[in-house]
Image 1 (tube, rainbow, N blue to C red):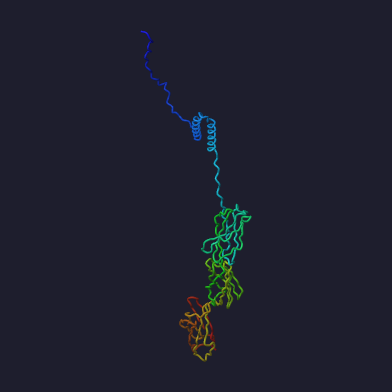
Image 2: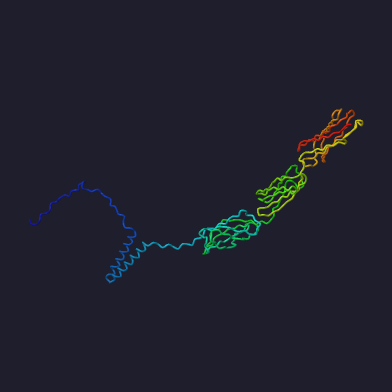
Length: 384
């Protein structure tokens, strides 16, 4: 037969396992950054528009448009945003110097303070002063310019009666105001301090070389106590609640004591009392109806008396009294226990018997009290 011989049939062989390359994962690169992706999109779009415009002779316009678009886009994504305008700043608050003593009896005071360093010397800034009276609301009362230094003084600021609470602020050139300073207070007080003396009582008796003056006045007042009789003076101070106590020497007899209080505001008041210095001891004054007796007249009645006074020199009622009479030549005679009357007196009547001999009869009285202890007194009766 004529024609070409058909190719022989061959069976395909499976690839050898040694020829199979191991499967590798396809790794992607980091890709195109976002700004450049956007740039690529814009370029493709512009290119498409340019193709449409080539046929109409607009190639020059396309090139210009693409250049303008790319320049604007790059400018937008690479330019640094311009900062927005900052709001005006407000100065820190000033400070006011607190007074050493808030109480005053003067109608005006000088306010002293400090402004922040950044404000010192700023002729366009002012210091605004506020005041609140008592529990009232705070309100502005004046403005003064900021001086060349941080320290400032506002002279002759008028006070109202009672508590005046001051604060201050800084007002800038634009009218913006700082926070207010911490407050300081002044208290206008023109009243004299009251003085009450609780011990000793006026015209009382003191049985000692000094008297302890105890009283009450305005808190934190200074106290001066003067004995005008001896010209002795002592000083002290009332506590926060006004209580005071001071010891002043006194002389025998009557003493006039002046107590002067000066309150924290400077107001002065004086109180006066009189005290008498007593003996300071329980006293018994013994007496007899006679002090001489002739033996020839025996037997003879005799009356013994005693007057008892307390340490303040006042008659003492209720004291226990015992009389004893020792006569030469006869047994001693003793009374029962007696009690003094409201006038401080007690009496005992007895008889000096016949048989007494010449000499001195001893008379003794013993006085006992619960509050003031014991005392005795003695006298004699002469037998002739």
